[in-house]
Image 1 (cartoon, rainbow, N blue to C red):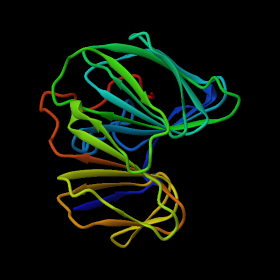
Image 2 (image 1 turned 90 degrees about the vertical axis):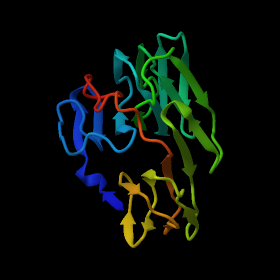
Image 3 (image 1 turned 135 degrees about the vertical axis):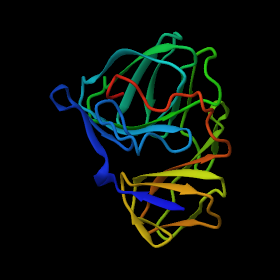
Amino acid sequence: MIDVRPGADRYEGGDPAAGITTRHAFSFGAFYDPDNLRFGPVLACNEETLTPGAGFDEHPHSHTEIVTWVIEGELTHHDSTGEKSVVRAGDVQRLSAGSGARHVERNDGAGRLRFVQMWLAPLAAGGEPAYGVVREIADAAPYEVPEAGAVLHVRRPGAGERVAVPAAERVYLHVVRGDLRLDGAELGPGDSVRITAERDLEVVAGSPGELLIWEFATPAAPDAPDAPAAPETD
């Protein structure tokens, strides 16, 4: 099954008065939709835009794998594991919240910050929190999140190039930029696709693109959280 979700249908959130604009792909905070709580282990896929000086004050997470992809600008992060870093376009950041962690995310740069943040339910709850960043991840280099039974592929096809979709039980695809086509569907920035039990699919780039492709071999544990709790944006 191929389920295309246009970016225009995302829930609008954030706090524009505080310089934060958020677009949610799944039920999140005040935007509750019982029919759109998750896809496999994916609990959230948020498109965030922060003006200079804006950010999320310290707040808690638990039992969640939080993966962040910066599109534009610089994301300043520090957390209760003692880590502090600046994440830029091309870097993959992950906070494994484990049994509990707190963090702060801010735009301390001079320009606009845009990033995609994805929350995954772990296969087993608990564990020690952990943090890591992969700098300038190479095209098609697999980024594994074993705690969620997940693998992320960052693909940057040129115009006319084809990208094979992993033949996994579940695949979640998010378009960062470019004009793409999948099985006859036209895709653009902000669009996502939820794919279940499909084989031999390809994405064709009509213009230079960038997309995030998650493959999931194992469903999330039934006792993992079904939907993110407050804060409404993150």
